[in-house]
Length: 85
Image 1 (tube, rainbow, N blue to C red):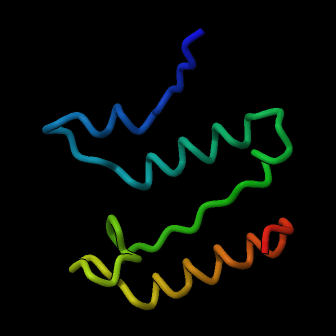
Image 2 (cartoon, rainbow, N blue to C red):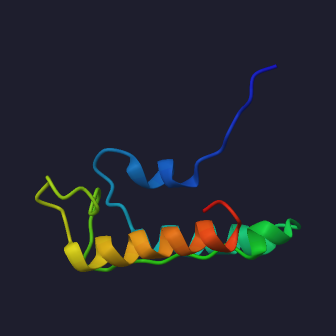
């Protein structure tokens, strides 16, 4: 049986069409809130307005130190909260 996943962001990644980050995040938040899964409802997004793709990669021009540091701390906090670290 083939597993199929739906990716709403693909609609916005069509060549020639701009990607609307705010609209994408709002759609994802709405989908998670509509879920019957309590883990999905507990999900949250942190958007760094000045950060682009791969903002945590310190060898790329897109690196944003302040956002990268905060994102990493948020990641580690999530691991601690969920017993992973």
